[in-house]
Length: 125
Image (cartoon, rainbow, N blue to C red; front, side, top):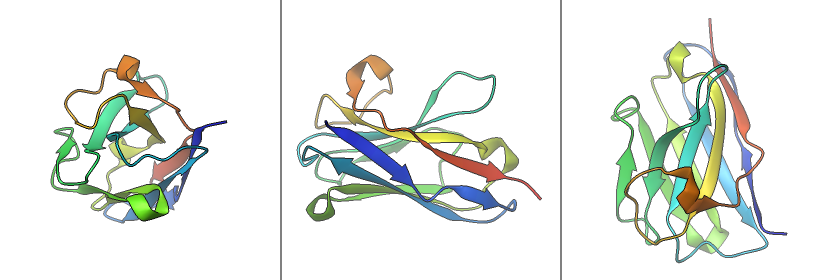
């Protein structure tokens, strides 16, 4: 069954860094954009970042711009999210999903498939 498996979350102090991984299983993600989303307790899921199929184009939510960097290694069928200068408000479960397009542009969840179980990121002192 096609799915993503996210990993790399954990507890980190404010100002710290984490690198999340998103490994595709049961399908190849070469020709599709991949989005990262997060959901904090009591809040709606929000789009965080997206990387196009070839990895050349990326987009970020304003709240993470300049701190997070998305990348992909199609040979490893994996997408990454490097998160630096983490803040308590970054605390959430982080998910990745396959966009039904090679291009980024919007995080309407209706355009994404194969959601993983997520990985918890907690930023706290």
